[in-house]
Image (cartoon, rainbow, N blue to C red; front, side, top):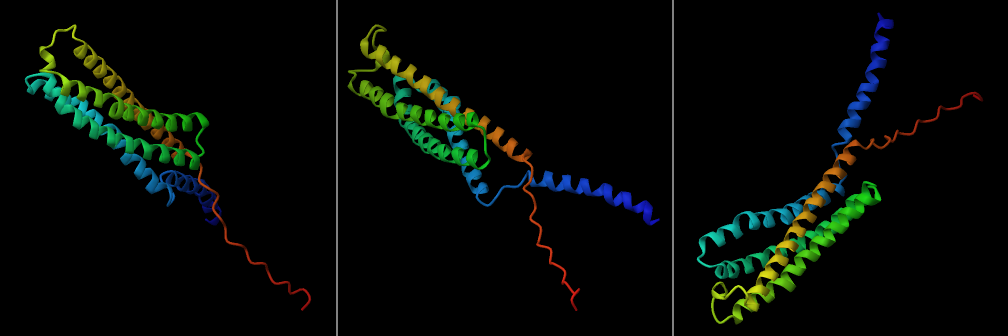
Length: 214
């Protein structure tokens, strides 16, 4: 009976090792966990407000308010706040993406995509806040009346439409950068889960006493 049990004990050892390896793939170190949580929160802030603004705030303001000029005046402070949130989120994503890619030994291309996407998203948010929103507000403030009543060939109306198109393009670029970081993050986490566990450190084996001379 002892001989029949020996193969079973041997066959169970590899399975236990695989179980320990698969369980290790779901764990993160004490440094990785808070950084990953901060990274995910920043991703939510970089994607959530722009999507909500584009899907709910902008269409509702143009639909409810009587003129496009009034809708634009309402959207400017909201968009400025969204840009502030995006700038802070992308700054955090730049740091956390670099740290996670370095700790998990990600390929150079993956690290470059994550960090450069964060820089591009931050630049897009700064351009909208600093270079596009102030001129649009200035045009509306200096206009003698509602810009909607101006003729289509009026320089102020043409310039305002141009700024609006640029803001929309940079806004889409900002959202695309956040989505790219999300995809890279998913790839990093998948690679981290598939990584083999580190070799377990075994306690030193005590040497037997040499009693030959006794």
